[in-house]
Length: 471
Image (tube, rainbow, N blue to C red):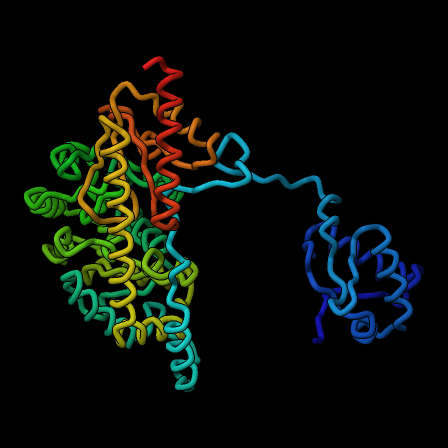
């Protein structure tokens, strides 16, 4: 294979060509332009590319191999050596954890997706069909708001499964939920908003994202009936981000009377509700209400994505917004990019249109229900005094613990047992009112068997931490 390399030589320079090649390669490796494992051209290919004798390149490769920069293996060619990383002392690994990770862990932290069960074969068939049938239009630039066929099919799908009331022209395809939120934040800023209400507890990453977008996140407490709309009314904000179908991370559902009151608030303040329907795919029929947007298409911006249901790598999301707001969103989008991958949109369209998306979600829904039942039963049997909030749906469980539990000590003890989990305080924005100690346990990427083992170990950590506290 003709591997190419960004490297040049100067025939008018005083330095010999071999030295130029050697120094040039060394510099590319040391400044991490070439990372360990990067495949290099053969000596014959690089010599031809540079217009020099092969012996020039051979000598340079041999010298760099002797210095530990390159590795040459029979049949595998020449690559940048793993030892080359030792020449760079400027980079360090930065994590959000104060201690190094154990070697073998079970990760029960939120923020992950079940990519193991990604429907590879069915997706490949959809991509193949799209590529084989693609003409000049499909292979060209698609409108920034999205491929018209995709928007039309997705409009029908969202209406069918979530009751979303929107026209295809008021639906925009985005690069995941994050881009959709960024677009809405930009429009709110343009319209004079300085703050955005957020659920408390809620997603810390989203709060940081909102801050970086120029808005101030204002925490609105959540109780067992969802967002405290009465406190929202007193907050002074005119827009709020909510997860009404299955609140993150508690799993509670916004009560019907609060849904009505939230919509009335938005109309009264001439504001908007941003509905993040992040895990509607995993809500059982008994736990599922129509989208909040269905009550007020003129005041609710509906946002979703394929990240949790399929894979984050697809970067496929969507916004359904009131017409007058969507016009502003499209104006902002025009200055950012020229849209998402049209071929991936069309592959997703086919996946939805042929029933693949429904089948995949149904299978995941049943599996996650089983995992949640394991969590519920284990907590009831082995963690007396604990309480799992929410119903029987979702990707994580919010497990309230006895009030005298030291949440921080428990999390650290679990870590020593190679269980990574976060406490409820990690998700809170304010300390008033103070919530009971809790663990937020994600089962999105584990199996039922592995989850059972992890919960058993977590119980051991709970017992140890309680003993240290003298409980």
